[in-house]
Image (cartoon, rainbow, N blue to C red; front, side):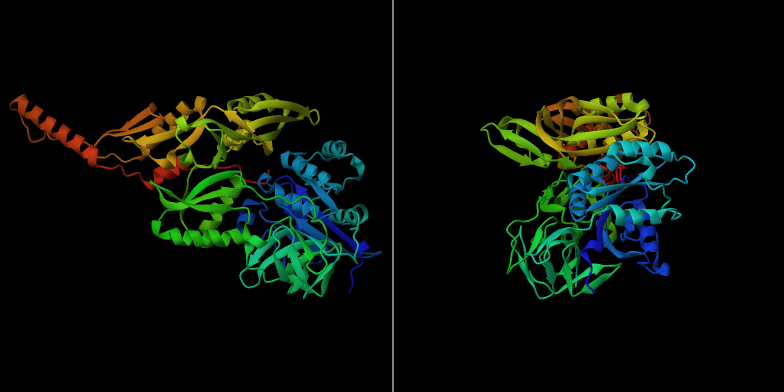
Length: 606
């Protein structure tokens, strides 16, 4: 049966972490009877164990629901998107496939960081935004206050905002009616050249790459030859269809529809999220706007705990890239850790997710080095070199200066925490830009911060200082010149490359003292003294010593001449000196893990 275009609604749900996005999706799927009640589970669209455990959405998902009203059947295509700042590009492509967005706001917490960030993305894509207040049945909910806050923000009548409980299903039907009444049907020409947006892709080991697409104009069917406009790759379509919970093959997909296309694509690099698919025989002139290459924001070395696992780690990364096109990697060698890979990630959450998946899905035990950002090093002859690892930094005499990446950060906080938030940003070398009151209680602080400074404990401290109420959102800004230096950690005079960092000169002494102190507790005592030093070039700025294990050579002397004892002690001293010159310090695994561990990176969709 041919779908009437005027009865199609394409929409997305956007929200801050834990405001009930996945729960609302579950209730909609239940109400439209898309899935049989005995197959229903919580977070139905989040099919990774990691997504369920953490309560976050990592990959975009799409589902087709049929909603029956007295005026007919409506096809509701819901594109569930990730909410975390690391995946902003994926969110923007998913929103580009829609005409509307449901903005879910927790009635007990109000507007938060990611709410606003995704709302601006939706407005940039000219989407019709429908606000919804969730969790109105909680004791701490204040729906009237939050409705006014949301209404003022987007110019929506607070009285008309649906007040729901996604957990119990209360008033969720109102949301479905709002989708039909307020979100426009797709406008598209059918007898026109094919133009389809790839908003996501996954890899199936039997069928190749499965492209999730939104048909902007024209139609697509099995047997057509298609072209990916950015990569130029051409393939024959073998199957098209829509999504229920499983793939549902159809004869063709027409303008305005959301679905999938299979074309025996085995080369993952031929497919780019945000690319445009067209008909090879009758192509469109221009690809759809908004495509960009996904560039890593942070880099880290990944090494197998067991050197024999190197081949397994390589295979695991290759398979992971098929499902996560944002990860990039290349082989590298470390004197301390052996053979491994220098990998690029979208952010700290993305890096943590990749580590978890390598462990769970591929059973590879890994160590990761401290994350770094990409620095621009300006050499003495005027050329610029990009480096993402401290070990690649040229000698200080060969370069003029280093530039580091900055981000534009927005911190959402209750007004009583403004002072401590500003102090935290100043500690992290932040530059104050603006302060905006959302209402009498909530403030947005706008700062420009070095990306390297917000990578470690920034999110943790933000949450602890604000008792969990503050939120963070950030976007890449520009590169700036700063007084950056390379700090090496030496063990008995030999640098350990895995501990090297590029750091601001003002922070180097504190950081070096901290690392030296931690290593002193973790490196086992040897037969000789082990000097642990922090060094900038040839200058030592911090030191601690692991004292030698000392054998009591005087035990056999009971009385007698003092010269006999002195002779034995001198002999021991000479032996220690000789041992130190030929002995090497074994750094245990736990020392690397302790020094390189990030702690909690502020997981979650905000």
